[in-house]
Length: 360
Image (tube, rainbow, N blue to C red; front, side):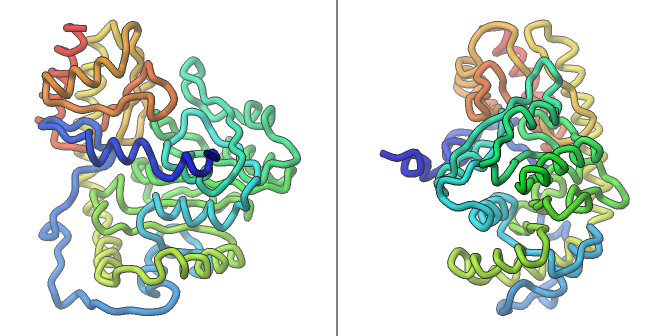
């Protein structure tokens, strides 16, 4: 069986959908879902049918927020499908892709499914999971067609600044390659004018969505930013993938953009409380080591001893609490904690995590 045949699916997504549920769920990486009532919507705001390549008001909302021309915008069903569509447009079977390690597993699975030859460069715990241009350059070859990174980094939540990202873009330009950056967690900086690496040069292709930061996962409002010719190629490719989106979701997404300032304010307040809870918990544990990012919705602690898989199993089966096993990010001594849920539930979940650690 070929590597592409083996990769027809995502081990992480299968686990997330079938095995992550628990009374105290610390495995979810985004903000808790908003209700329709919180979005302040009425039936008069909705329509069922729309055609063409993207809903113009939605593309305009994205354009205004990220200061990008509408012909560089491709809408997609969440960041996951945006990543798939971008990779499919950028790669041919056998093309060499240089991808960070650890990485969000569905991106790796998609590249392999598409028949790419995936090479890796490391973002190490010892170096704070920083994105190091020298490490990227060391693995870059004349065959490299694409460099793939996440910012904020998934699973660690570490931020890459614009200067470093520009260095990555310079390396890609020299190699006649592109850079795909998944920016789905970058909105947790809660900046008035959200940054994006797309402003750094045409070699950058960006994916993002409303899902992780704003509790709007159910809308599946994702997008790709790419230079116009490439964006149009993605629209045409999407004709054989998804054809047309759910128009009610597009209409709701426009309403969400109009209300984003208030949604963001509540999200930031929640994350400020929850981040402190996680930091206090880590302060109390000598059996865990962790990089503690200032932003984001996740942390990625490392066990000082013992098995993270054993911990995750005990935690779920005995303590009704779930975290994400680090094996899905190729670091089995780690586990990922999500900080986007209800603070009281997070507090109890952390107490149960502590009890499971003590038992081990």
